[in-house]
Length: 89
Image (cartoon, rainbow, N blue to C red):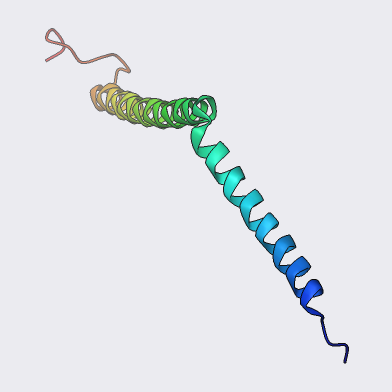
């Protein structure tokens, strides 16, 4: 087992400290990068808007399917295949 000298220990400490400082600097640069924050915020809003749009579209489709099914039922009840309106009663 090789024993480290004081100089080797200091070198290893310096390398570790340099890596730590580089990581800290990267984190600070990421926090200060307002353009990426804005871009991420826009994406989140777009995703939320898309999800809301899909929800509204699915709701509208469900209502349309319900209306069509009801219309088909009302046509078949009359036996004539015609829409039952005020005059048909």
